[in-house]
Amino acid sequence: MNYRHAFHAGNFADIVKHAAVLAVLERLTGAKGPLSVIDTHAGRGLYDLAGADARRSGEAREGILRLMDEAAAPAAYGPLKAAVRELNGAGPVRRYPGSPWLIARALRPGDSYLGCELNPEEHGALRAALGDRRGVETLRADGFAEAPVRCPARGAALVLIDPPFEKPDDYRRIVETVRAVRARNAAAVVAIWLPLKDLETFDAFLRDLEDAEPGPVLVAETRMRPLSDPMKMNGCAMVFVNAPAGLEADLADICAWPAKAQGEGGQGKVWRL
Ligand SMILES: C[S@@+](CC[C@H](N)C(=O)[O-])C[C@H]1O[C@@H](n2cnc3c(N)ncnc32)[C@H](O)[C@@H]1O
Image 1: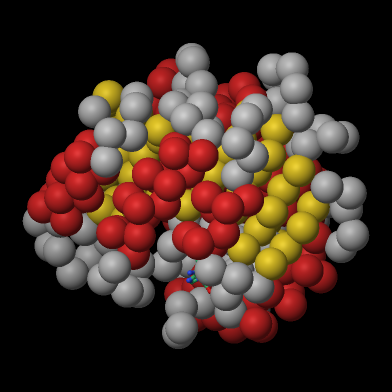
Image 2 (image 1 turned 90 degrees about the horizontal axis):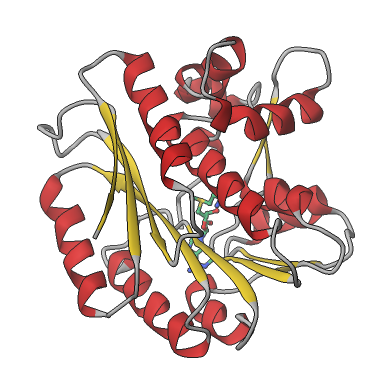
C-alpha cells in the first residue's frame, strides 16, 4: 500500500469528486428519514496543502487553489468552496478537506457515517480529523468487504467508492461491491470515482458494471484533454447508481469547469448508460 492521497489532495479530480458528492448529499439530506453514508476508501480526512507531499506534486494549484480564486466558478462548486473557507478561515487556503470531513459536516442529527481506511497511519489521522462527532464511525478495514455488510437493508443510503487504483482488481471489486450493495438495498445510491486514462479501460469497466445489472447509471466525465496518452491521467469520471433526481445540470457544470479552465481541449460530459 504505497498510495498517499496527500499528493493529490485538492487536485482537479478531487474537487470534481467532492463537489459531486456534496451535490448528491444536498438532495439526500433534503429528503425525510435518516441517511447512512459508507465511504469505502476514506483517506485521512484532512490534508495539509503546505506539507511536503502536496508541495512536491503541486496538484492543488490547478484544482482547489484556482477554484477558490475564481469568483465566476459555477454555483455547483459553492458548497465545496464554503466548506474550504470554513476550514481555513479568512486566511490563505492551506488545509483541504477529504470526503470524510465533508460528508460528516453535511449530515443531519440522526444520519450516520462510516469511513473505512486500511492504512494504519491514514486511519489514525482520519480518527483525529473527525474527532468524536455523533453518528460518525471509522474502521481500519477493507471498505469493499464492509460496504455490503454495513449498508442498511432499508432506507436511504449512500456508498462512496474511491479506491487508489493501485491494484488491477480494483475495477472488478467495485463491480462486485455494487452488486452486493444492491442485493442488500436496491435503493442505495452508489457513487464511484474513476481515473480516465484510456477509453478501453473505462469502457470495459462500464460493460462489466452493466452486466451486473446495476439499475439506473449516470456517468459524469471530466476530460482534461483528449485521451491519447494512456500513461497520463487525462481526466476522471464519477459514475452513479440510483443518482437522485435533478443532478445532471450540477454535474455538467462541475465537470465542465476544470476541463475548460485548464484549456487543453478538454470537456465535461454527463450521460446515462
Ligand atoms: C483515493 S484515497 C481516498 C480519498 C478520499 N475518499 C477522499 O475523497 O478524501 C484512497 C484511500 O484508500 C485506502 N485504501 C486502499 N485500499 C483500501 C481498502 N481495500 N479498503 C479501505 N481503504 C483502502 C488508501 O490507503 C487511501 O487512503
